[in-house]
Length: 117
Image 1 (cartoon, rainbow, N blue to C red):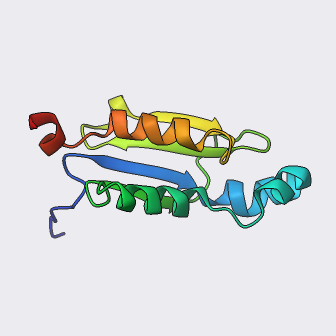
Image 2 (image 1 turned 45 degrees about the vertical axis):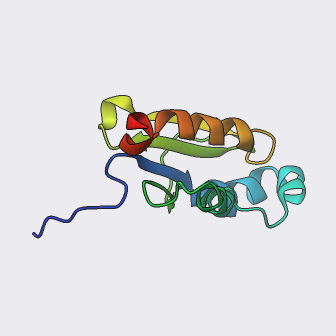
């Protein structure tokens, strides 16, 4: 094994369940799938993080099923680099609650540089 230094040290990861969006919502709640259209919470988070200059220290990535499913909702884990004891997991409406999620991410994963400034 070779250790690596990641860009998100000092910030953290946001894990967004791909299965919720691509499989569970369309199969279980077609009305929700129709409302969401081709919206991707992970892509929206990535674009917003880049726009706000936070991408790198905070990364939004797709993951497979986390086995914490909510009907018509997407599972998200905010995982700070400080370790799993500080992680938070939610199920949420990916459109109606995205701004609240983003605020929570920024609050939870502020970078060391932001803390010092």
